[in-house]
Length: 347
Image (tube, rainbow, N blue to C red; front, side, top):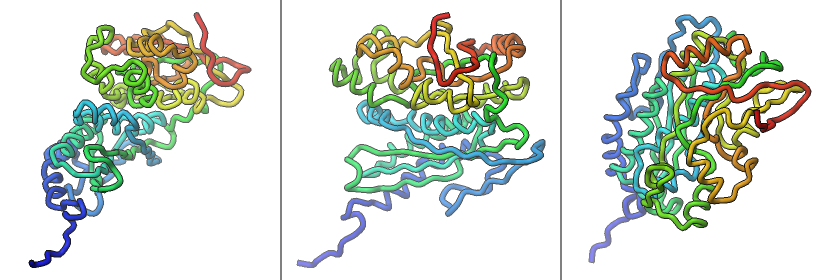
């Protein structure tokens, strides 16, 4: 009997399927290309030509993140075309906080067994997120790693690069007592706290991904897979017409960890409870899990995904502008003197 030599496919890696996955991805990736992209998909590096029109002192701003255990929900639901937007959002919303306009994005996708159609769905979500953020998806890496990931599972991360004029960097240094916090609504849980989410809904409550939850007017899977909102468009418009002293992306760590990142020493923040409508998903989790209020606010966004810190005199003009363009926003608190951290209070 003739002995056949081992192949890479015998070891669990199918390079032909990898090539087919790239072909399926191309249709989605090309939709994100702008005139600044000087390369196609498949090169050794992504090429992006900077347009420095109107920028006197260009500074590049970068951020990296992943989707976390929200991916477990995608596995259960076998729905993979939205979590890519979460990955983009977590990166571009972060660099936006320093006033940066996102330029381009690269992703990293690792799986145990590559399934081209699934990989293409994932990249579709990434491309959709890039289009919402106005940035180009100029490259990435898809790794097939048998023995590292279980069959049907994958992990994803990415990074975004943006640009800001040095004189327009937002770093919180101009924040002072009396400044107001304007909150922009989230689309849901976004991409943080999903280990607690899964423990509550699946372990404690015994629900399945297909169960309809009346309070959410959706199946549990639909509610939990709602993509993270991307704030680039609305915040870019705001920055073009208004002075903003600080910006906060409410991600892991909730209000308690993220807001202090931009507040100068000697100042604190007072958050006025009931000044915005908390989304039903958070009310439900708090009730069903008997979760303490402070635990909710240090884990989740509670319905506010982005916070802008503005001077009191700019409040009415900004709020009117947002009403005029159909955007929801809420004055959710203020900066207070002789304090530290975040304090929740009834107002």
